[in-house]
Image (cartoon, rainbow, N blue to C red; front, side):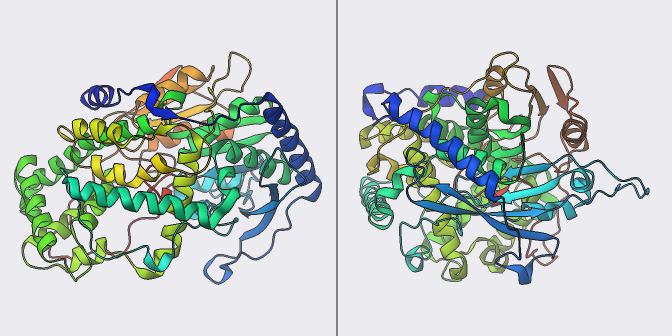
Length: 548
């Protein structure tokens, strides 16, 4: 992680003059938004939520119910256009999961956001069915919701979903000038599409409004104070919430933390992520090399890298199944950087492909047309939030300079991350002025921060920064591990601290360390490829978008 931090520091040096923003400058606007949030929350408390069957009730247990909450599109105009956020809930079971007849004390609602930006939290209540969550599900109503812009909550779209997946794609680690010009044209077109499809509403999809929406959801649930679990990007607007509404906080868990420093949002954070993924990619390759007897991909990380490069070159010449090119291969292994329980499946697919069987790779890496609408909606929300949140460089030469430099030492994700975020250079909506998050002693109840030391999606530096900004917060670190999203995952030490905090309000000392969870066991290539990974824990690949 030290190497990644140094790479990021070098690559993230920018001329501030290249960043432009149209801040929410007038204090009158900010005051109006404060009044509008209070008014919307009061109305939501009076209306409550009329829970009934969920939109996809045929696929969901009857214990999960759904309803909607009205929020203003623009909090400065609370009587103007309204949008509806869809909320899901599973009531606390109140049953002791230890099998006794003792009834557990209900502690209110636990609201979750899985990150993104652009991920839906509607399926979060189902996590109470997993053994790791039984005790928490006994005490809390588990509540999820689709944030503004995420279907079905006033969904955003920037492009015809039928054109979103366009077959096999390239993934050059050192792109040509012609390729760069092509991607710049695509980024400009995507930004124009967002403006054309969303109109003036586009400017209202940002993190500050996500934090305000969360307070309205709290009020609609009838909660005087919020208990919240934010994962990945959810930690950022959770930190905004703690700053804006400290007296409304009961307990907050920040799981896999975004660096909240205003100057890092979001351009520099993406540089840091690209640098960190190089270290995580090395972790993946070293694990595969340790299991050469199973996968036959090499006894060293360098040999595994050569195999990956052979596969990428072969896919560039002839996409597997006509649908999987180098871009899809890179995307599959990028997901493995988030969760190490994907390593056996990814290694098996690469091994099988190099031995002449493309089936497992096609199964794991291809993009399915039936998922295009959801994927396009996720990307639209991701870009709207991050592009609106803060200044971005508007001069391509800055992007080219910084990322060319970074790609020399961190080629795995760097350029892919550029193409994912480049529409922000040409964004048509005004930018917010990032809030300097923080809370002094006594302003906020103690909060719990969870972080893996080698997390690449949200590098560990962010957890240290948030701990220092929220007085009374305690950081629990999973040492020597890099999974993204720790709550309710495979580490019993981490889960013990989570339960102690949520169920008893008990925190360890200033910081606590947990040993890493066990590495995944290799799976022999002779076995059939798995069609499904384990259910995503909060903040996992379901977190969508690039981060997060």
